[in-house]
Length: 80
Image (cartoon, rainbow, N blue to C red; front, side, top):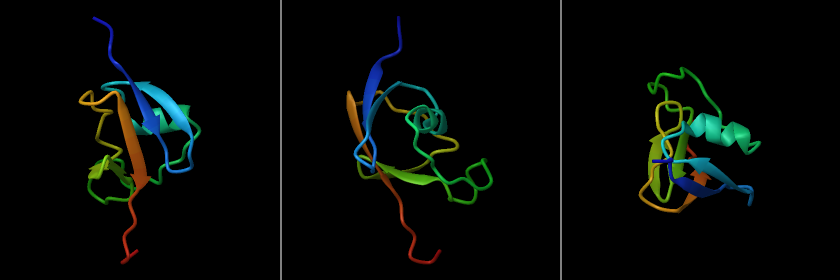
């Protein structure tokens, strides 16, 4: 069975599609979106994004299949 295609709404208003299970960094890159990174291992939190209100670390997370459309926002940390 083919992977489900998910519509992604990015913070800049751009909308793209990605296959469920694809890595967030790859989905962002293919949409022309740059997500900041640091360690690329999930430890530093530089790549945190909010997906439908849930904070995930893009370097170690995949596009979920629980919805056909997802809203992404960039996390902001007042201490950085």
